[in-house]
Image (cartoon, rainbow, N blue to C red; front, top):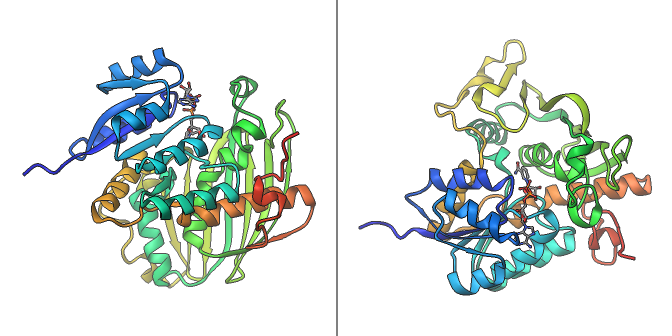
Length: 358
Ligand SMILES: NC(=O)c1ccc[n+]([C@@H]2O[C@H](COP(=O)([O-])OP(=O)(O)OC[C@H]3O[C@@H](n4cnc5c(N)ncnc54)[C@H](O)[C@@H]3O)[C@@H](O)[C@H]2O)c1
């Protein structure tokens, strides 16, 4: 008997929505597209026609009411993520939402509460976790094969010009919910945190050097981990030769990935310490799954089938979100921020940048 397909809808049919459509196509035996939503009705109609989606709406609440989808992909500008996630979970739909999920740890914790109350789940798009190379490196690192981690470099050196920031929702705390750290570097920072484990303290500097924006276009930070490993983070949208790079020096090997917006196995390398070729056991993986929205959706659908929380769910991404909040707090206060210290009552708990509406 044919397995029932998951009824899926997409909210926001702009730039990134195409990657979500490639994910639906990759899993067409498991996903049944039912609706596309965009406040721009003509854009939604064009998009739906192009991707064979039967119905369109200009309002997410109306779509949820009429379609009762099992899964909603949220691809709107950042400020709309949280209210739409709330609506979806309250309607009993699972959510796969673009980054960043929301504007504060307070909102993140509210999503976790809603997950418990409704039994539905919310996952953050973090496609860098889901390529076969990252999955294998994590397994090998966690098994202890490389030894303890010691030194980490985590760099997002990208270039975004004035025209990029001319799009109205970009460049402000209120609508983009952060600058290069939250908007661009979040991918490799999340991968780093996911590979490394528990961080304990961060010291950061952020500035707006060149673009006419409210949020930062450069940030640098030093992170200490519970095993005393140290990581340097460099986030920039002012770097003409663009690159995303993560380098992890363990006791017995250096593990590196260098790319831009994604990777295949070929973007990764593991260099053993002399005489330690045993660290290469299990490397590279036989499969060569690139990092992609499709790879992440495959994991989410498997979780739906088995009734387990999806990877990159709220609990699973909190360490990354807390690190980014602490990066902003440290850069604005000039002080180091310890893990767990940003709690209810702290302005940085209520907003990633301690930003208060006037
Ligand atoms: N994962 C990645 O690699 C990646 C890459 C690029 C962008 N993104 C993220 O994807 C999100 C969208 O970015 P984009 O570049 O596609 O933006 P975009 O401006 O191209 O598209 C956003 C769309 O959402 C629609 N929209 C706005 N408010 C809405 C609402 N309340 N309800 C329904 N539709 C609404 C707009 O009309 C527009 O069509 C952002 O959060 C961004 O950070 C992620």
